[in-house]
Image (spheres, rainbow, N blue to C red):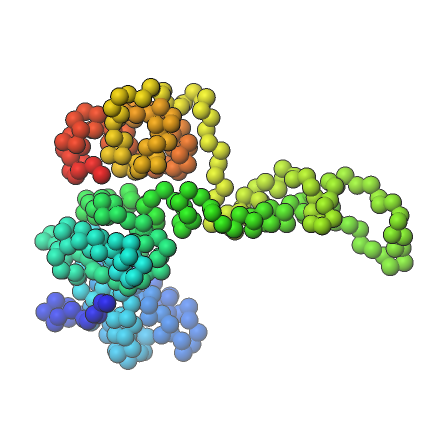
Length: 373
Ligand code: FES
């Protein structure tokens, strides 16, 4: 449980002022709210102040209270309630907020805090010697299904292992935090199960059926009460596909609905319909080799886990040297085959493999400044 207090007097600046651009933005923001409701701007203004100065000072709280015509205590209550507001100076490159609530705790958040203690500072809310990194424990951040997780500034990094958190911290420390994609850090999309959907597959079929109906079947002419045909009268012939009377939808799937179906599946499941894997006969498929007696441990490449390693083996990739030799088109082929959406390039598999092929772990440490995972 976090204790939220203002920083000691010694570190509190005497004054606070928005810079010119932020002052203009604050004025506009306050005007968005109806007369008498300007206090609703308190959270956006506090956030902007924090983005400007790195943390929320007492002077800032008082200034914003004056701007919104609020008692100081009301703004103080907001600033001390939400852990998104930093009440002391924090790391300039990253402030790591580790969720320590039950689901994250059961999934290993204590080990993540150990990483922070070891890499940043033993104590929470205490920046490292360079002032670039700090950390703290926070309560549930609403991503329990992807536990354990951390928040860094406005982004969540989920499904973490201690090793992955170390890599993330290193990237931020090196000023390369933007190279890490927020969200799940394993092979899954948002919160869907690893390996794809396991439930609600029936609902997807239903969405498909309903979507296809209007695209294929022209609307029946409106019945004119004076000209209702007898029930045994022959129906006028149309080009519409035959319709299943139970479902009231055409039996033939029109191609035109395909895009809508994909969109609906995405909406219903949160998962984009996987594009087709590139063909194994494609000219850009990297050359396969026979399994050597001692294959390289491809899992040393960051981004390759046991599942991905076994898929790589299936397509004849067993050595670092093979991966190191991939050209752009070959990387794209493998990326498409694994449905990785650019991760191979982002994680720089080729450079990692080059180092590992050249001199194993020692060379990797020389090039990347850390051990391979
Ligand atoms: S318990 Fe950690 S995000 Fe909910």
